[in-house]
Amino acid sequence: MVDTLLKVEHLNKAYGTKQVLHDINFSVTPGSVTVLLGPSGSGKSTLIRCLNGLEEFQSGQLSFEDQPIKPTPKTWQQLRQKIGMVFQSYDLFPNLTVIDNILLGPLKVQKRSKTEALKQATQLLKEVDLTDYADAFPRQLSGGQKQRIAIVRALALNPEFMLFDEVTASLDPEMVRGVLEVMLNLAKRKMTMLVVTHEMNFAQQIADNVLFLEDGAILEKTQGKQFFTHPQTDRAREFLDSMA
Ligand code: ADP
Ligand code: MG
Image 1 (cartoon, helix red, strand yellow):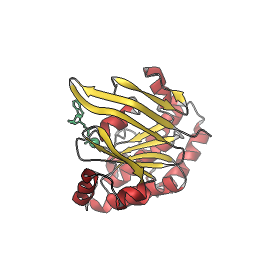
Image 2 (cartoon, rainbow, N blue to C red):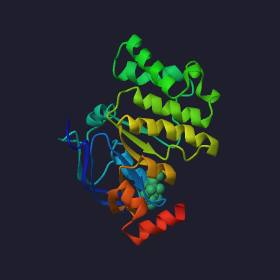
Image 3 (tube, helix red, strand yellow):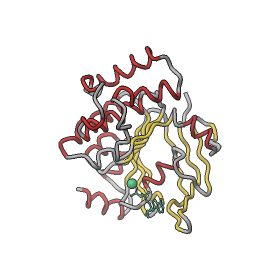
Image 4 (cartoon, rainbow, N blue to C red):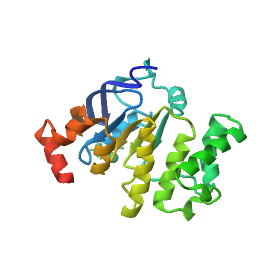
């Protein structure tokens, strides 16, 4: 197994003339959970999108499994099978049933056998407690259920790394717990994850490491426990106070 699953070196990103990420450096070890925290507008989504080829960047080097990523459309297309992503808005296809949403990638992109993909999808649905919804359409699901399906759909590609960008931010409070539990279970099973969240109790529970971002720069890069109990900078302390 590689020591470092993802490595980010000297990443700089601007939108037009506006620099939004400044010399970002960090790495992610296999099986670890990194929580990316920071105020609104600090660049969390932009950073996560750079790691999945959804944003271009001006300079810097990304490596996955010790291989430098050459940022071409073809490379990203291949890597997106290994790097799954779930966003704040559930992007399920409204005209497909739950099971067809889940099977689309495994069948069309990965060309796997229907029997095998269906078996896995059924197991994943069971794990998120949505077995009965296989033939439902997304509009028949609650927000929390849709997010659990969005996670299952990403997992159905057997990714090695999962990116989560505020996946509970648009959910009603009573829906949040169920989605966070799915992520906690993934962490228990040593899925490597990079998570943006505003749920601080959850963040504290799940974080092996924390990256604290402000104005596009990493201000703190520490172990989870240390960040929540002994933040190093005033800004991180203020941030934690504001979230409490
Ligand atoms: P966060 O996810 O931490 O709230 P974002 O990554 O969304 O932060 O945004 C970081 C900065 O980049 C903000 O100043 C935001 O206004 C700007 N930004 C984000 N997306 C775009 C875009 N597509 N075009 C121009 N500026 C953007
Ligand atoms: Mg964001």
